[in-house]
Image 1 (cartoon, helix red, strand yellow):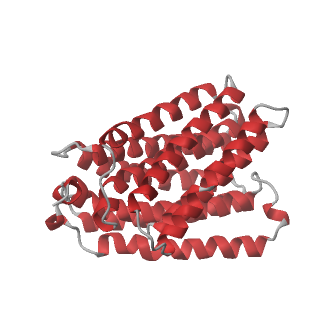
Image 2 (cartoon, helix red, strand yellow):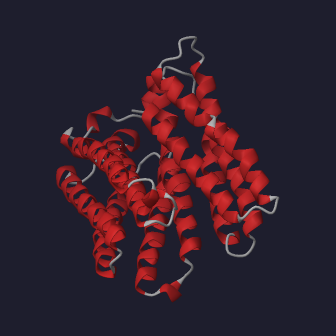
Amino acid sequence: MTPSVALLSLEQTPPITVPLRFFLTAPLFALAAVLLALWLGPEAMSSRWQPGVLAFTHLFTLGYLSMVMFGAMLQMLPVLVGVQLRRPLIVARVIHGLLVVGTLLLVTAFLLNTAIWFVGAGLVLALAIGGFVVVVGLALWRAGSVHETVVAMRLALLALAITLILGLWLVLTHLDSSLGSRMLLVDLHLGWGLLGWMGLLVVGVAYQVVPMFQITAEYHPQLRRWLPWVAVILLATWSLLFSQAVELAWLLALGLAMVFVVFALVTLRLQRRRYVGCRMLLWISGIWVWPVCWPLLACGCCSNFHLDYCRHIYFSFGGGYWWWLVLGCR
């Protein structure tokens, strides 16, 4: 028995209806995002600040990606961590319902650009995501064996909490624009959401499921131990520098991008199979996003290009990276 399998607690698997409601809802939000983009047309999607773009983005990130990750984490937490959730069916119903309603309210708020809708969306999403953070955080705190997956999950949950706080701060800027720079907060919100929450959760779960389901060797112990911490430290440093030394912060973001490139390349190297299936092709497509992004971003940071050039490249390619990897993990 491999170490990954030995750490599993298969007898604590929650009822299938716990994750299934999230998995069945996610494709509906993805379809809604596509239909919204077709309905609004290319003119309404011409800038990242257009209401249609913001509504489309949150249908995808909250309605699809986070919906899938919430369901998967509620399903895998008892198995990977060995902690039984209390009343998992009730927890899943409440969090799922709040997340659905909150996402729809937020999309409506962007399209109508009305403060009261932002307040309602913020309150509901604070309950949904905050409740998820509390429930999962308590379960991770009670974990009997604190192995690398538990550490990565804890850091991912911390990143989700920071993402929520930044999102609520952005809601307040819709009520009073003097409360902060919306452009700065949006970039931080994106960074902690895409690279912190989603990135670290994928890394932590991969430590267990890749060797087990892909029948590969284990990840190197030093990589398992240090990669999540390096990513969080770089992300925190990037956030602190972002308002003072923007060019330096974006160069630091290159190092953060390469942390995930290293992880993805190591994961592919563990496969060592001649047959390249659909899943492998999706992973390869995602991995090559960052090597293409790196020289373009470096060029933007080190030249006279406007910094919006760097933002568009980094977050567009970052979103593409996780899109391919999530599809490959299905």
